[in-house]
Image (cartoon, rainbow, N blue to C red; front, side):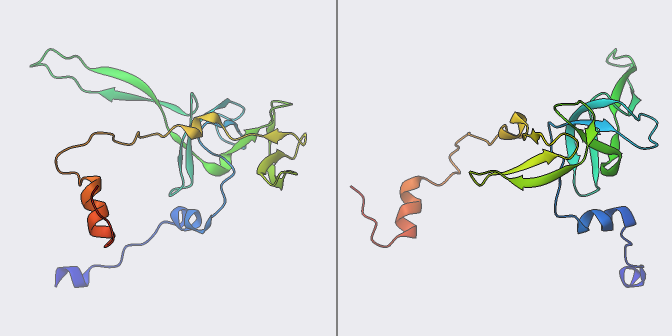
Length: 165
């Protein structure tokens, strides 16, 4: 009865706006500059992480805070503090133009060979996608265990005409 009486969860307006987006111009590995009235305005850095669900990005060396990690007296580990990056809203950063090194908006265009590229509105230069995108963030597991199905069994159960040689 208590579950029925609970009010439905309200979705925050920021998350509702993020769900409406289907195009993202900034990806992991891009060089961006903080713009607007943000306290870190003018700083440049590389995108470490893009959180599309919340419409936020993490920029290397920008919007830093001190995180205190508690120690354990029994094991002889002392308290320590580390610097970490906080996320910034997607609207507070702009891509950096590779020619002028200034923040720029971009437009999508097609080259003669049919590839879709990002083009800087400031200088008209093509902004290539970063090479880091070709590397997976979490590598695919290559460990084979006894619980994995052997290829022969998969082929035999999938195709009726399969015969062992």
